[in-house]
Image 1: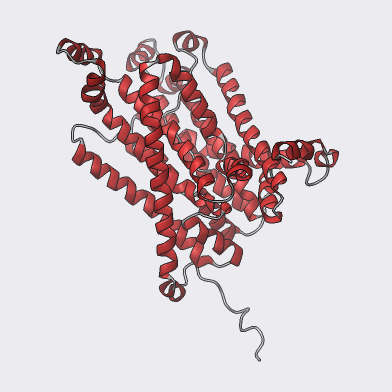
Image 2 (image 1 turned 180 degrees about the vertical axis):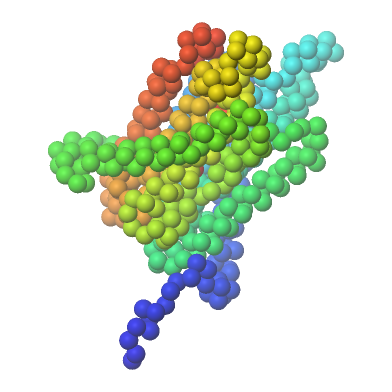
Length: 225
Length: 235
């Protein structure tokens, strides 16, 4: 057997031949990535809408709520997952507790910014027209806060798409699985393609959300930053 | 035995507090690579953000760079840097600097942009040249947001530096990653506590620095609330 056959091989950044026969691998990872992100953002919205509204109605709640989730947000994701593993195990529950926890700060903060930026004159006018507090909230304040809420959803979604890759360390990961696979097998293609796909997914979803926002609430400007 | 008790015993073991895998050495590694990355990132990002904010140009770029930075998966960036630069601190430094730049650009841009135009006009009227106006009027007024950018970056760099253990880096991430590999969940948990505490300590100590740097007039004017122009989390 000739020597050095394998040593001559230089791993290209993307091995297109390998890639073309392994597309289902990437589709499955992308699918898991989207599902993990969707659960995190939906769960985050389900938690932060009532929390944000409550913190707006009862001012005393505002700082404790923001303070608590600020602390959660500061905890590095790998550390948070690791702290949860003894209690919730390796898997989706641990991943989603962390991911949802991170979206809540972004979403509640933006909801509060939106609600607080409703001009007092508008509130006076609504009161003068006979709106009761609950009707005023749902028919005047929340619609006017929608642009800020949308901006929060955009930031939360893009952030979560990036963070999902880290859940590879607790057995999930979406595209992060393939980054991990590439690292362990010392094989460029999966890790390069998965990283590019993750960035592309974030940008595509962000653009889709901008488009959705323009259709749903045409009076708003793009304000995410 | 509950994991908290076993983690407490882990910390109580005197061998954890010395040697190359001891907590002091890992702390030093973690802080060194993080501080270096934030410092290099600041040298690149702050001048860009400050100049863009001062001249009010390319605002979209300055703001959208945070959105692009958010889309970067820190894990992928670290691993690719590792494939490009090989073993050592260089790949970690490159990846962390790249992740540190966006929030500092956005925050410093917004900080400079938000300086009251009347104040700038007053400075001009008092005879300040452009450079003096920038250094002695605009920058002090922008300190809260300049520091917010540094704080945001620093906390994220500390968090991302944990992942560097995956590409053979040091720091507290070693305990978490090695613990997972050895299925030693006490070690994982203890490492996670150390990482969490270090991230909090970074946030709090930089808030303390900010309080020292903010001009007295501003302190009297504003409630001392931590302000940020961006939320940014990459790890």
